Amino acid sequence: MQGAADCGLTAAAALQWTRQQQPAVEAIGPHWIDELQGLAQGAGIQFDEALALQLRPGTGGLPEGCTSFAAVGSATTDAQTICGQNRDLGEPYLHRMFLAAFRPTRGCHILMHCVPGEIGGVGLNSHGVCVFANSLWGKSGRTWMAPPILRRAALENASAEAATQRIQAMPGPAVGNFLIADTRHARNLEILAEGLHVTEVDDGVYAHANNCIASILLPHEAERRPLPYSEGRRVSLQTALEHHAGSIDTDVCRRLLSDESGRPEPVCRPFRSGDPFATIAALIAVPDTQTLHLSYGPPSTNHFTTYRL
Image (spheres, rainbow, N blue to C red):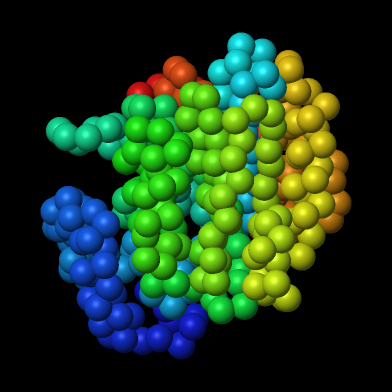
């Protein structure tokens, strides 16, 4: 309940607000209720507390400064989609996050990077649908939903387009940027409380960070944000992807995600004293092979481990 406390909510008030949102969660994923009950029982916490982990009462999100990308079609060496991101959070999250494999008896399997207790992190499913995410900040703040709910809903679909349509049909989808890709397509969703914009990427490269790109949403973006330089970080990665277009493979992606050269916010941020953000993980997904390459810590100083569903 630390996020709620930071926003002036007591634990009791946060849990009361959480209970009020349960019908909306059930409407999107009724099967999640049993899962959350099991999670609560296993962790020795109350159901409301398990649900609060998904809804993040108060803030709605973790402090993130992430950078995501997708390379689709002719941009890669074998016409197979490659996508991923650097996850930049506070340094303590390096040892608070893990890679989870969900193998339900019904529905697709999911491999995702998350904090303990989250039902929806970033990663890919057994259909080859990948989801990556970046924080955005709007003038109106958050909606009722938080990213774990939206990410899990997206990861239960058989295509990027189906995931996009499911999110578009949601009442008050979570504020943020969500890059969703499959074996042949990518869809980038910018969501603020004021609206939602989709960018379709069916061939080529695309990068996103922590600021809106869509002109329709720019007037609604908060004027003061935790990451005022993220556009430079986005442009740096976009330019590098365009330079390598046609020859992009996982090795190229590893090098690009390891780039510490940009200032004041490089794509890869090592742990520095006084910097509120650091790259605590780098992820590269290949939907065709259901493969996830993961670096724990900055990829510039760590090696990638390969995982397969």
